[in-house]
Length: 308
Ligand SMILES: Cc1cc2nc3c(=O)[nH]c(=O)nc-3n(C[C@H](O)[C@H](O)[C@H](O)COP(=O)(O)OP(=O)(O)OC[C@H]3O[C@@H](n4cnc5c(N)ncnc54)[C@H](O)[C@@H]3O)c2cc1C
Image (cartoon, rainbow, N blue to C red; front, side, top):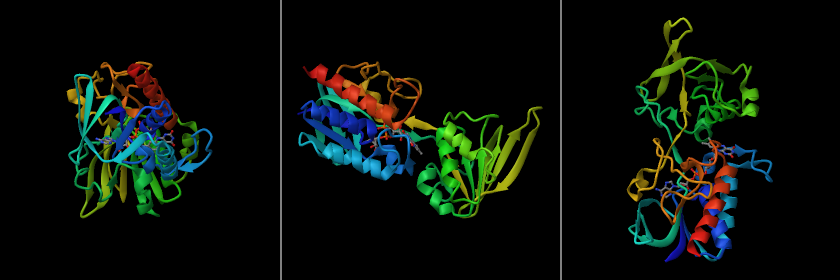
């Protein structure tokens, strides 16, 4: 039986595994994607100590760091059930194995939100994408659209600037909700970017791939205007939902969206079960690598105290 099982191979999970290993705990870390969300990120320039690093590079560095510890076993794969019975935590993986732990850190991160637009499902992978950073390169000199007004949307637009010929940024309100000033400055007044405010995409059209979209705009006086715009790619960057479906049976407290409620020690509502990173309600609403890593470190420390 492991002292600690960590679910999630992203920044939060890897940080928890590193800290727990250094506390000499026996650790198993399981995750389906090495590096988690950052493995899909092009460039990271806000990771203190490493001024500029690509997502895949940082993922590899984090992974290599965890591999250093002999008491840390790493398994890539998908967890399909987690149960706690009589103080033992059972973690089942898709390959049919069941792992037992005295404590657990849940660091499963989030999945991209769907926009529920007519045609969205049919054109997913045929012009509709949920990861600008991953798919932008397919749109060299093409007309592209980013839907969303937060930091992910802005990063997407920023990334497309050097690739696409034109970028529509469709936002529901009349201003952006993003707070990344550096990204905002880059896209503001850039002739390639057209921000369409107070608008929704109501339909995505095409034959075998995306060719156009219908944009509905509500002007200040309440008038509704619908127009069809040509676009080759649509990137939906409207936020994320937590990967908490498989946690429902555990009985831990979550908020209405399924984010795990934690205290400042990363404790959930059940002893022995800790959570870290984007899947939690967190210490703040800043969903970033260093915050996720900080939570991972705190969660491992709390697990160690629990086992004493
Ligand atoms: C486009 C984009 C760009 C970003 N750029 C930056 C940036 O420049 N700087 C920055 O600080 N932050 C950035 N972020 C945010 C950052 O990526 C996240 O805050 C961070 O990755 C959260 O880490 P995490 O470990 O909580 O979750 P994740 O990174 O999402 O990792 C979750 C892990 O859990 C695993 N998992 C999920 N479900 C299961 C399951 N059932 N079984 C097994 N494993 C499972 C996943 O495979 C993954 O390994 C960006 C995010 C996006 C989307």
